[in-house]
Length: 357
Image (cartoon, rainbow, N blue to C red; front, side):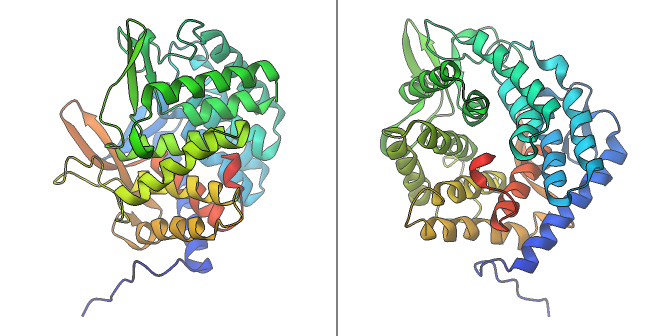
């Protein structure tokens, strides 16, 4: 008779630590296979990129988290070596630069006060500020890394949290003002009714048109929740209320632990990576409210079935629903998924402050 796995019981401290250690040990295995390339995702073999694409920063980010956990200089040096290999992306025409350099370098500055990481993050921040479009009053997606020919008129919600974090890193008033403007336009472009968010939008003759149904894509809603939480802490009202509405929408629309990748594809895959991201967002939001215990419980409820379920095995998290070809989305192990699961678990274990991720 097979053992019964209880998914809804909160994770114990021992379970949380075992999961953290397993993910951190997995990094050595991945590094041994991928060498100086950037691991993107695994679907039978690691897909490796010489430049890292938009996922490269998460590979460095995993090592920054490992350095926080271990306290070892060798882990910190590894994170910095990976971050330095991202330097070629500084002038990439893509707003996804903020994802690359916040998780790839900003984390080292934020969590470990690493001066070299801070310098690289600052260089990326200046490039992002230069890309701010004064007509659109935001940073457009750009034409590279999938932005396409219309990328200069498109806005993506994915880089919102990373952008706000980079602009806040130096506490420069001018950069903070750019962040406020970008957040305000993101709201106009992507916010739907009742806290649901679109993942992207297109500016057509000065008017923003949502690119997908608000709230349908789970990871898009998760990206919005991460960004709104940071916006609420930086800028207060009204973004604090927006963050709460986005959270309530998630709780209403996704009562299951592992949300569907897209709500309108009921026969499609689920996306536990989105659940890990939301767990991190909820843990951060809970720190800002006196009655945040309910949010903390919900955050833990999202993590327990991941750690105890079939998508997580000996540090491998096969939980990121990823487009591996133009016609196929499937769950894979990815550096992005592993990063957010590790960050959420380390937050749960009080090893990091979720508001700093």
